[in-house]
Amino acid sequence: VLISITACSGGKKGQENNAGQKQETIEWKFGYLANEEHIWHKTAQEFARLVNEKTNGRLVIKLYPNEQLGSEMDVLNMIRDGSADMTISGESMQNWAPKAALMAVPYAFRDINHMKKVIEGEIGKEISQEIMDKVGVTPLYYHLRAPRNLTSNKPIRNLSDLKGLKLRVPNVPVFVEAWKAAGASPQVMAFSEVFTALQQNVIEAQENPYDLILSGGLYEVQKYVNETEHVIGWVYVVVGNKQLNSLPEDMRKAVLEAAKEVQVYANQLFEKDTEACKQKLIEKGMTIISDVNKEEFKNAMVPAVLKMLNDEQKALYQKILEV
Ligand code: 2Q2
Image (tube, rainbow, N blue to C red; front, side, top):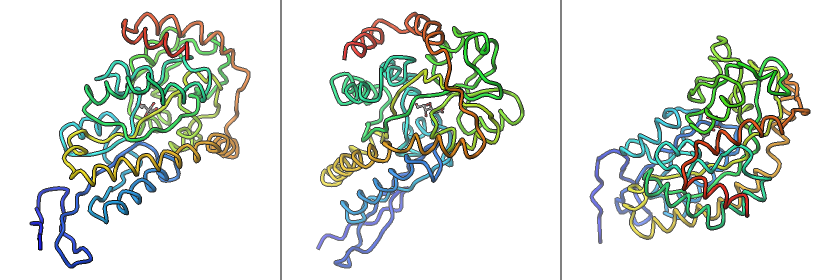
């Protein structure tokens, strides 16, 4: 009878299995910026349940919503040094893997279906391969994202309304250049700092899809959602390469199987989520500005973005437009 020695190092705990044998359980820490009502969290709960079931309790995934583990960039660095294991990230990974920038380039995707074809096709594979190689994390499943909209405390319909607006952007160089070219003054900040910065008027605006505007409680400090729809993108749920590849083969397979199953669930939740979040924001008192001059924003942002993309990124951008 094999009695595995229960290691007392971090992340491993002893527990009885049904044969009364001591078996080693592995614990993964999974941190992200969305709150407990968000579909990223609901999907993460289902993923953790499936993994627990498929590994007979040997792999336990602990969830840390609301940036409890740290900001998106902090947790990515923690995964790389082994003090965390999973997170949800996308275009911010361009700081290590340039191709990840294509996950959220202004006005690149015509609509969600166009984007889904890209994610599940050659281009998606090319982007996730570079993420594995250069960030050191493996995409397990993805979340489609609703368009990003600009929130503010005055209506913004065109570039003259936008002039000089102090807005927060995530740690995404493409976003900084795009908003500068449109005449705003963007500054990089972690998502969890946005609410307070808006409250203290350090910034006047930020941009996110409806679901994160709700998740961040931004309706309390922002009056308008201006439907710029300047970015349609996706994010990956990622795990550290080392963490995944150090699992026994049967457990690694169980994780990949659970990811495949939960992808269906993630896409189902996404179907109705955006409209539901939009309605909740209206109930919370936000005003939707739907007559934004998108062409003006697009004509200002796209040339600046193209100028900063390197040849590889530009080639991928062209390929996306042809899908
Ligand atoms: O505004 C945010 O912080 C998020 O919507 C980010 O755009 C998102 O998490 C990306 O940073 C993903 O890499």
